[in-house]
Length: 511
Picture 1 (cartoon, one colour):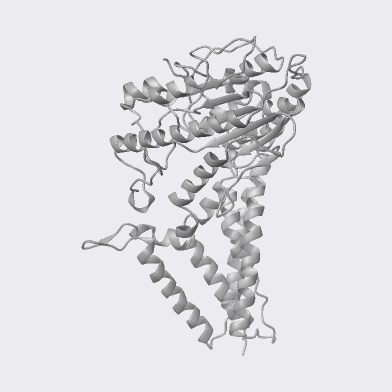
Picture 2: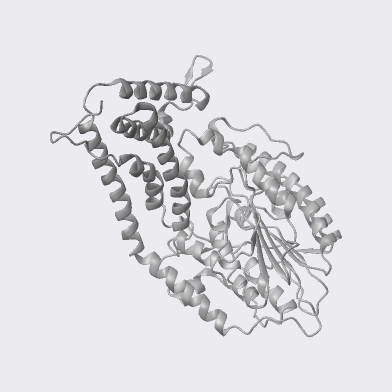
């Protein structure tokens, strides 16, 4: 028999839905510089229906709506708080037995949860006060998250995003349209980012890995490999924000009147970029091979996105479930391996897109986690997903992953060249170099800013790249050589900005 209020009516329980929404709202409100409203909507579209179905099942099972609601809220809170509660004992040992791991702790957690559910089901006490408390607490939690979101949207980042979109629109309206010379077909363009791929001479001299065979194989296939290339910036967001907008961030920030180089603005600069805008105006379609980074796991202007379907979580969703009971099933090296292999297996021109195509691929190798050895097998992993502490061990894993990446990239290049009717443009480029050297290492800045930068260019009367060409000049070169562009070349410089460029203070790296 259900509990009643003094006037004979039970309170309405709405806390299960609010508590189900809260994890996503909380994460979004704390990461609005990087997350998007679409991330939140997609998460809520899963969490809220799941809570409703669970609520319905509980209601049918216990025949009491207050009990059913409290059971659902308990399950939701327990599911998303698991990782935070057990964090202090993660990695704990009893003798020689490792007890601080999900294999041991999850069953214990579920047993405790089951006992609490049984106690709620069998209790004869009034649950009116518990329901009122749960309703109030859920309103406070969700209200606080929404308030923070509102404050953020009224802040400087929203104004900066609007200024950036206006700046790009103005540039696209003013830029002379790209158009190949008469009688020449616009080439398909492949921009393939191999995340954290270091230049060959630095690999050999500073990391002890000889990559000359891979460079020779690229050259044998007709690539020009820029032997002194550097990244313009030393993080993915900054590097792509610059290369896809044909300019240095210092100049872009001033021209667009951006107040703060936040991660959100960097993401906006990658999504609303000048290169894609100009190519779209020239009749190109955009095909994207996404990574699991938020800024490159989708693209608002893509005509085709190649995405592995099984458990393919966005960066927002991975963080959302990272501390939950679902984490062992939805994350980890196995899924990362499958995502990378999917991109490598399918990299090429979409057969169903007409006209010239711009293929943008952000492939998360040789960047960690290190999920490939030189033969493509999964190397031994650190316990509990911890990072490798030993620099020497990280270098071994990194160079092993490079060796396998080389093999698969050559296969992809051969497949592309075989399938293309006309010679394409292919850019193989690191966004930055190896980042696992200690900050006080004498070679740290040189290693992190030295990148692979290789170009497959059809015969052209245009200018060939020089040995020090950097990403800021990559599309200036391509547009000038094949699409009638008249862009001047910028100095090839490299900058470091702690932390991640948000401050907008960029320090030049001397090479």
